[in-house]
Length: 273
Length: 272
Image (tube, rainbow over the protein chains, first blue to last red):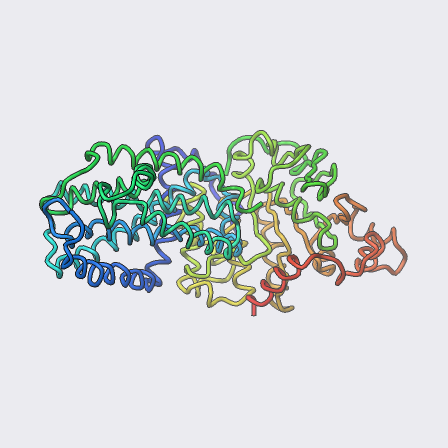
C-alpha cells in the first residue's frame, strides 16, 4: 500500500484552549482504566479490608462505647474513616505500577511523547480516582447493610465524591513521588508498608483528635487524611460534625494536591534515568 | 507532525555530547551527524554508551555537557519540540501487554494530539501496513515477538516522526520474524523518508539496513563509515564481525554488566 500522498495535517488547531492538554491527560487515565476493565480482579480484592474493619472492629468497639464520638454511634463514627482508609490503602501502592511500567519500557514511551509531564502525572491521579469511586460505592453498600445512618442528599453525596477523589489523587500522586525516589519494587514495597499504618493511625479515622496526646494531634493536623476524614464525617453521616470546618477541609486537601502534583511533575522524568 | 524546522541536510547533529555518571564518562564529547533519510547503525559492546546516547537523543536523559540537534531542534533548549519530531522503539517490549493492539495505538495517537478523524484513518492504515489487522482486537500479550515489534514500530510512526530511534529492533526474534521486521523498516524509509538511528548487536542487521555504521567503544566512536568501507578498512575478506572485534578488541559475547545481560535475557524470554 502507498501512503506517499497522505494529506498534510493542516493545522492541528485546538477546538478550545487546553483541549490538547485535556486529551493527553485523559489518554493517560484511559490507558490505565482500560486495563482495569480488562482485568477488574483488583477491585474485588480491595473490598475485603473495609469489610473486616467495619464488620469486626467497628461492631466490637460499637458495643464497648469506649470512644467519645459526639452523639453518634461508633460504627457511624468510623464508617467515613474506613472509607478514607480504603481509598488510602488503594492509592498508596499505586506508584508501584510506575516502577513496573518503567521496567517494561512503557513509561519511556510516554516520556518521549510531546505530552507535558504534568499530564502524565495528572492522568494517573485521575485513573486512581476512578478506582476510589468503585470503593466508595462498595463501602456505602456495606455501611447500609450495617445500618450506618448515611445521608443521601445530592449536595452531600457530591461532597463525599469530591473528598474521596481528592484523597485518592493526593495519596496516589504521593505514591508516584515515592516510586520516583526509591526506583525499585522491593524498596517501594518496604516503604509503602512503613508509610501506610502511621498515616492511618496519625489521623482521626478511628478515634477523634480530642483523644490524642498532643504530639500525635500535631502530626494528624498536617496529615491530609485527617481533613479527608473530617470532610467525609461531616457530609456522609446523619449527625456528623466537623472538627476543622468543611471549608478548611477542602482547602487543605486542594493545597496538598497542588504540592504533590508539583513535586511529582518535577520528579517524574527521573524514574527512567 | 509539522511544527517548523527540519530543513538542513542533517537530521541528527551531535555536538560534543557528554554524559557522566559520577566519575564514569559514559558518553565522551561525541560528535557525528546523520544525513536526512539515511539509516545509521550504532554498534558496540554492552556498556559502550549506546543506550546512554539513545536516552539523551530521545530526551529521556539530560546531557552533562554538549547538545544535539534533532530535525533542526536543539535537544537541551527545546526538548518538547524534539519530542514532536521523533519516534522511539525501545529494546524492551514496550507495547502494553494488558491492552489490545488497537488500544495501544489509540492511546499513543491521543498522546500525540492526532485529531479524531485522522486518528481512525492512521490506526487502520498502521494495522494494514504492519499486517496486524486480524489481531488488532487481541491483547498484546497474546502476540508473537515479531508481531509485538511490528506493532511498536507502527505505534512509533503514527505521528510521522522525522527521526526514528530503535534500540536493537530485532533482538530475540527468530530469523523469519527478523526478516519481516527488516522488511517493514525498509518500507517505512521508502514511504516516509524517515531518518533512522538504530543500535544493534546483529552484524547481519547492520549490513542489511544501514547506510552508515559507527562502532562505539568506551563512550567514543572508534570508527564510522559505510558497512563496505568499514570492512575494507579491516581487510579484504573482512565481515562486520571482524570490524567489530577489530575496533573494540572484544568478542561480541563479552562485556556488559549483569543488568544489561539480565535485561536482554528477559526481553528474549518474553518474546518466547
